[in-house]
Length: 333
Image (cartoon, one colour):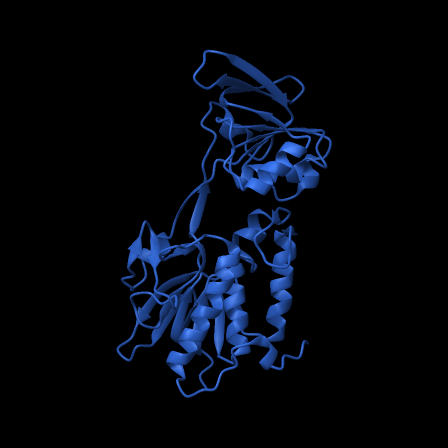
């Protein structure tokens, strides 16, 4: 068999792509998993390794790095070919319905494709204040990779969504003091998370917008604050700033592929089997959309087996496939 010929190519090695690859292995489909980052895990591993995740069934509060570790162990049970630090530059649909996968230095062929790219390339929404860019990587951060870096320090977190609240709660046990600054009195996080915030020692500063910042002689940062719908102003002096205003993202790489994928609000439209408008091409995770879609990791974990099962039936309609894990006779390695 040609080693570059696969039943399935999964593009994107985040949690959704990893679980899809595992499911391909369970059904003994010849599959390859391609990830552009140097390691599997996607944004969860690269940006939020110590952040707690609450929407994974059976693993309440699991950290990003722990979740990726579990998924990596799972892949060893039913392994597939893995290629990291490799960006897919094109996917071409051939006349026979198969696909040619092009990446730097390598060409492979696949009968089906699962796109698990999430929202694609992402950029944090910046803190639009004079002098902010000069502090990035020193006193100003858009991601928290290691909470120990903030031990014993005063930290101001900007934002009002789940990510900002989660970051504040994550840093509370190690920081000297955490402030959560938001432009509204109410927070947009899940009710349970907001309740945890209210019970914590995090000091909420609302409703204020950051107006200015300056570095003091001892290296601390003073943030000028303006109260919303008021002329009232205040100031807050801390050692570190963490900005969680969300991200701007796009899947520009997809537009360069030789596939005319139907989309809605920059997300790939799929049907109930996760198939796109192109037969043999499926999409799962945050980059896919359908009526009623809830963009959670838990949702992506459900979409992966749906897509794999559908494409397996399409490729091998007469193949008998186990539908439940209890009937797969898995032997853990």
